[in-house]
Image 1 (cartoon, rainbow, N blue to C red):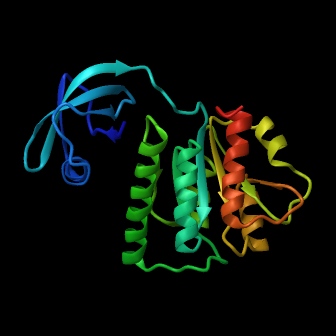
Image 2 (cartoon, rainbow, N blue to C red):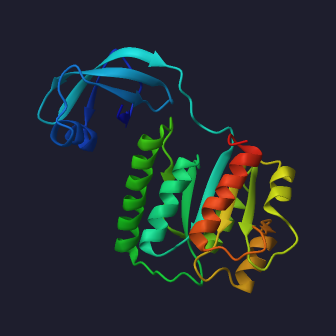
Length: 245
């Protein structure tokens, strides 16, 4: 059953507009009597029936409220340094499937891709759309936010002193502190996983992160591709501190 996210709170009757309405009417060729699952801004979920159609809106009628919270107890943020387009798309999709609550695209020294302001805004919109489609597909009850692209220093400035937030960064030159041990010692309710670009972090960047309170961890004896490291780190975090264990 198709899942929709509704901007507002569920009621006996609601209207769906915009791209979701267009998709229902013109792509799915939906008819009265068909049902969808709807999630509202408060995370409430319901089974709803399509009962009327206008040019730009679909009217839905409540059939049954559902107890279907699929969100992890862990507030998990992925701060991913920019990757080539297809790889970044992949990371966004898989992070949402694995329960990440926020994705922060980060500019760092070894990033291969460089975006001007217009292209950066377009990429953010693309990644947000990918995140929303992934949330619908995997049955999330909350949307993952993809923030505007920031640089590494900005990320650290905004988050290093944030209450109940801890930063763990995956670093290929770290060979002692394991991600497992750091996760088990973590006390913060919000956890930021920082993953580098294809070329990894520079020594200066690694020092900057550590001086800002971030903890370097190893993901094992093998050098992982950046997109593999992101998926692996998020999976381990959800297993140890979230809802995969």
